[in-house]
Image (cartoon, rainbow, N blue to C red; front, side):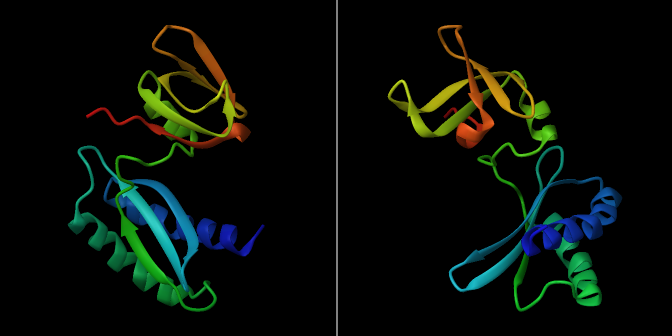
Length: 155
């Protein structure tokens, strides 16, 4: 397990009781480097959407735990935020929530000269995702081919 994975897993474990107490959902945790800074980010959500006050509440509680546990080497910035509308589908619960909804898929390599696909999420498993296109045909993508998968934006 990489250092990044260890930090993310430990953060999820510490966040879980806080998130459950407030009846929020922990969408994702990431430990990433942006420029010269390291960020430890928690993305939370709830029915009706998360507010800045919700993020601040979780951030204050978690910051104390991070200071006590001190498991992340070096300096970093801890952030709590909403996953936003364009959040990618990563976990099974994301796929379950998105079943029957229009999604956007971007592939690493062109398929039939296209790299962007839109359709209704019909099924998924550990390896594949199937969508129904506008013309009612179905397309199945190997997850390894998918660079990005998220809910589609319809403005």
